[in-house]
Image 1 (cartoon, rainbow, N blue to C red):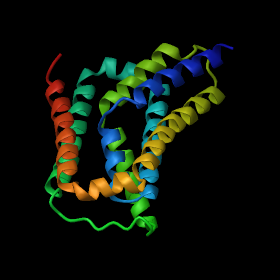
Image 2 (cartoon, rainbow, N blue to C red):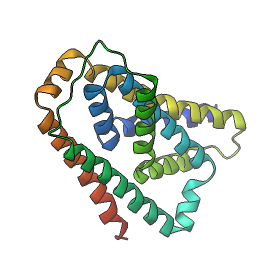
Image 3 (spheres, one colour):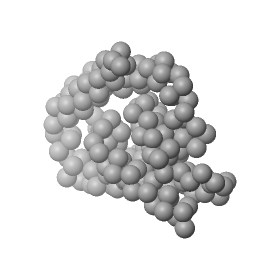
Image 4 (spheres, helix red, strand yellow):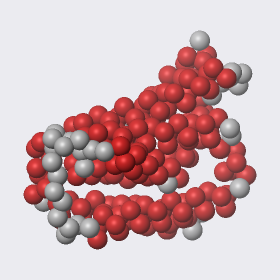
Length: 210
């Protein structure tokens, strides 16, 4: 009963966090509308894999490690912020490049793998997500947890992240959002790139603050 209450608490808090707008949402939205539905879903599974990785790290004591070594958290912020800013810059610089998209043409395995990797790298580059997982797990994990409970937690973290972003990908990859993106691609990309760069810069700037 204690394990069930802890599991439900973790799922509830992670669900609230995952629906909050951030770099992951921006990346999934852009992938879904400018590539394909399958690419968007592949990126969503990458986000889920990133969430599962954070869950494993939290189970292994990430919270205590970051408290013991504050410089590690600072380094994560700088590295993650620079990576997000780099992704945003790439989107911004490519805003004027035309993009021919055929909704009926399925993507290749290579593009799905790239989308998965992009989703995964975007997820794990955000140290704030790592802190959320570490804090939530520290608050809700029962003292006498077993291996089975740990596996359940990791599976649910993957499911929460992947399911939400897959839903976003499916919704935004329909014909109308895709047509709107293609019509106003330059402005959409500039906004998306600007948001990513701003979030990255904010992370780097916050690394130097106590």
